[in-house]
Length: 155
Image (cartoon, rainbow, N blue to C red; front, side, top):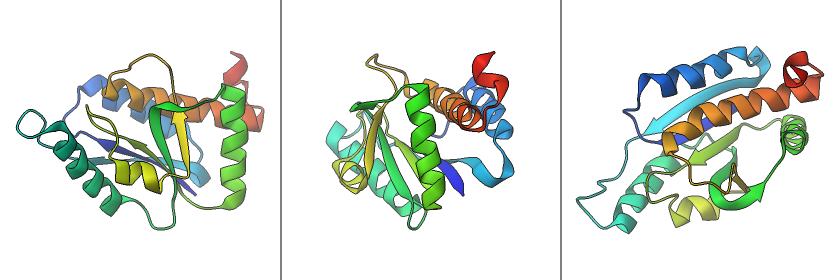
């Protein structure tokens, strides 16, 4: 089973990639965490809605087949680490890839939101989209460690 972060944006600071990779490498082989980047829409050159649609079209074409799509958005449901661990265990029982979609500056396109099986909010804070990548990777690693009784969560 794969966990896939489908994210808008391709040129991010090195610390973003390093943070994501740190936790992706900690995941067990049977629960790989991968990143799929799609180019941002032409923000600043076209209407924000058009840029968002461009990103959404790119995201939907890169979405793994049959994947369970989770849209990350501020209006989604907030989960504690323990609740995320229960969701992760449920997703693992289903055996399908799980894809987490993170939009660009204007958010996720309506078409991506419509395709999502779940909506998850990492925080009520407004977070830079780049920060979401390592934050999500750590949250998934923590959820896995809770589910497996690994000491990481208690450290």
